[in-house]
Amino acid sequence: MSETEAKRWDERARSGLLRNDPLLRQVLVDLRQAWTNPIEGIPAGQLRQLAEIGITTSSNWRDGGRLVINEAKLREAIAERPDEVMALFTQAPAEEGNREQMGIGRRIYQVVSDSINRLRDRAGSPGITTGDQSVLGRQLRDIDDQIARWEDRLARIEERYWRQFTAMEKAINDMNQQTMFLLTHFFNMQG
Image (cartoon, rainbow, N blue to C red; front, side):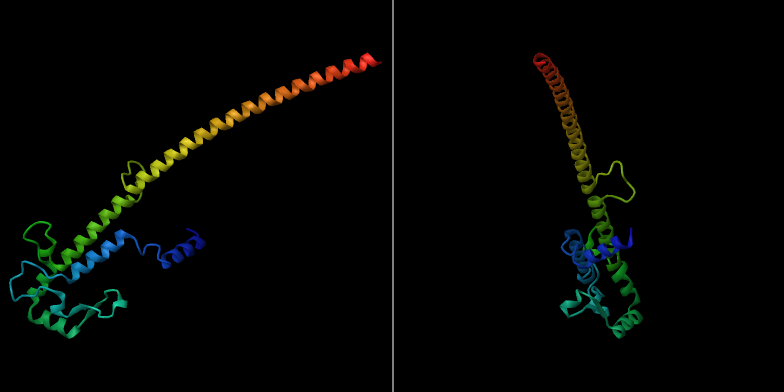
């Protein structure tokens, strides 16, 4: 990628090219839920949310959900309830795939994995050119097929025009010969 192209991509990124992308918007929603929703299946009285250990989101809406850490509260929770803090992040669900019962670390891993799979379904995998079954891959194949059909059609039209042009040149040449023949006879009759 040239420097000019890189600058153009940077400008597009800054202008919000991906701002309204539904896939990215869903990833953000899923990540926020993974951080903020309480964990189900943890016994009463134990840690169930990040807020209980001093990790909250900023109250300023302009921060876009930035995490704020109360270091003293976090250190206290780690020192006094290390097993509960660990469970808060690593708890496995009782039912496979039940995100509400997953620890926060597992939730985030699940969200990222699901997002990568959705992106792969949409855009395809890097380096795969044959057998690409992604939405974009299928659209590219359809466009390639349309281009090939148009190229064939244009080639047939060009061939038809060349035949017509050749026939027209032959007709003009024949008319020029007839004109020369008639002019020659006309001048011979006068002379």
